[in-house]
Image (cartoon, rainbow over all chains, first blue to last red):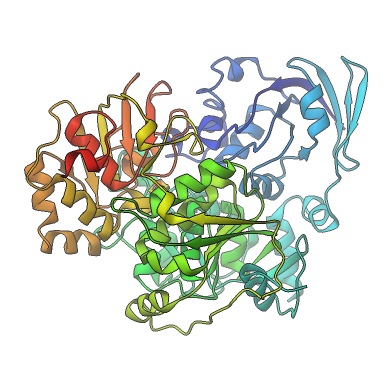
Length: 164
Length: 421
Ligand code: SF4
């Protein structure tokens, strides 16, 4: 179970604002986290606390394939991203590195900035404790549950390679 | 139900006769690609897997193109890490400075992508090789690591939008204008999770360089991949560049598409995407007065030889505006050499433009032309997001090489028709 304060943004939050390319000459998570979202919201890094939840509109994470984007979000303390839709590379990267993300248009629209939100990733249930509402996201398909249960793609592949 | 080109290629690589949209499959890979930004992360993950070597030394490509020639010490460290990895694992397709180019121009040129392939790259513009009738898509570093170790990658079989092209292009209109027009029409998430499949009799009007540009920007509409039907032009390109066997897949006649879009090429005008999204398009007739500080001609979108020739046609015998920094970067060493032999580089330098060695450089605001606060650039690149080319309050306008070159001369966004009479 995840619980935290919502940070709400709009549509098409791209990977260049999640972590600007000028900082990609490192892959250190802590260093990346220090610049997370700075071109869109300079105060984000100072305000975010461990467990907080990011909420956004359509096409979250569009743009580059940089895994640095979900890595920066995760290292900044964000525990889950809820959006109407995700860009596909961001979606697979998040699964692969173990950052839970949920597609739920209803929650993405209803949750306001600062709301206290609780998420059950395995069932896809999202609870808005500030507004006293609940929303239901599609849970992950079985195959992705396997990857998540193996704690990301690397362990999943390691397991598979041993079988071969 | 019939299958689209993408579905057929994925089925064949998963050892299946038939696949359905939404189905999760594990497919064999013909090429796994990475660059100096994404490979360092992949190397760390690769080491965690504990595999002895890569699945096939001839099927991994590593291209240090983003912050190279090394922009600073950190970039140099990243490049050293991937260089050592490439040598240690005996990777055959590692391209050092002096031979390298921007990855998505280099891979087809080196014959490493052919029709029917399944290719993943830890770079979103890996979708470029769809121009050759391959399934090719961007993934993350962890996928790259898993792909290098196992030779496989998981995919969700995508639905597709079909684009039927008809007619001929007008003068000064190129593949860049066609794809900007299409993205303007369907939006930056218009093809989310789907393939964009291009075909129809209008295909003949598009050169291979036009098709690379268009497939390159499929990701800018949110697509998983862009893919072109294979014709005589594709085959002669592949014969010229590659000795590898290839396989041509045609979509079934009863293939199912979420949408079929007719694109009438003669109606398309030179098109510009305004800040800060590639779907914020206007035709050149609607741009109004936009003064600029910089012009960038190059990148994996428009740094190929035809792009250089077009820019030279506009710049020949003219001078760039004294207040416009004009930076031209051919995408590979081969393109650079050809541009030199054809006298294009001389035209650029005489016009007052700076010519750079192949690099991603300014495209992602890395180096070689970063913008200051409030500055505006016209660029032939593919993204105009906030802060993409430098300061968060700078602006990027996406356009074709013809429009970019014309704008360099006048100092405002300009149609080539106005400059070349
Ligand atoms: S030229 Fe630009 S878009 Fe292309 S690979 Fe380099 S950084 Fe990415």
